[in-house]
Image 1: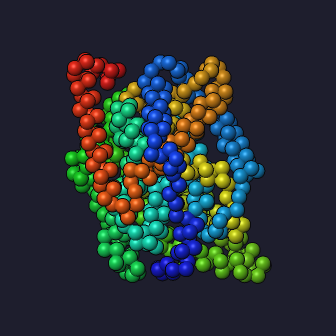
Image 2: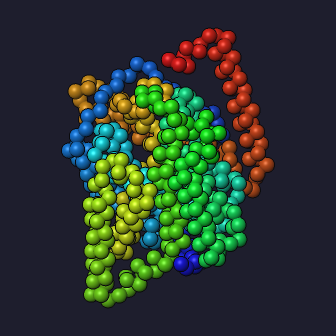
Length: 468
């Protein structure tokens, strides 16, 4: 392995690392943000906990699902194909596009309950976790910025909305398992590079850290009793039982979800470390004479497709349970093959579909919101088994169009509100005193609100509202 060169990684980071969204400071400090947040939470409650809006049943149609995705892809291609700012391997626009089209299929899988897509969805989720390792490693390796304020900003981005929704709707954190899973692996990347960060520039240092991550994962997940020993004290936090399918083992969901992608984030880190080497190889191919260039690319594509066909036949087509057993050790294969094919030519690296890129920016919000404004759970901690409808159940496409419009609008607003509030609550490292003051104020407000809610429940006798 070779360490990243300064000029190479600067080019890569310029194109890849997500920059904070510039907040709308004209409203960030006002009551408007708070009012809008509360309004959206109230909307979630109305949709999910009342009978004011009707529910519909899910019906799977491969034809309709495929048509919707194909139509959206064609619209994206003909209306939003744009040149990337930097034509680097896995530049930011490309990774946002990647997240966007995977999220669309992930959401359609839930909306139509497309059970035959299960294995594909597992790969898509692994892709998100892979990018967690890739993106965070790239940032820390280049900048060496392990400031507590920036770490808090990441935690805010991953958890602010889900905490609000959990409190408002009395749901468990693990209902939205993507959030705790990404939070955990983000922390693990931060710890891996932050501890002994002076060794990050040495090849032996990074090698030892990556191997150390593999060892930690093996001990903490592959030896199941160790996992339960670590997490049992935190059952109150990561425990979950579906009320429709009660499970006495409250940690089963957390173990199952986190174990599926326990190794792929390390592969993302390794790929980030090797990124300049891979990009240099692509650039060397680009400079060959046209005959040699076409021959080399054709050979690479042929090998890549052959490997993909092998993985598809022997792994992807396995039944659900058998596939889950091999997924943690094989999910890196289709991810790597996709990266190779997506970046094979300069033109493919130069352009991306900005519509999918825009959707990729709001994946967290669309993931959480789907439970309560596109689909519906109906009960606390319930899985989203129903559809939100506005018209007759006999008009499924009109209902899909209407609920999707509301759903995407709400998700985008939540994305903007989350980032606006982040800039107010968690300032930069240069004003750390303000950060601690804000944390103190949040803790006091949370304690007061919790005390007031307990008083209302006991004094006014509204405990039945909590459970019904």
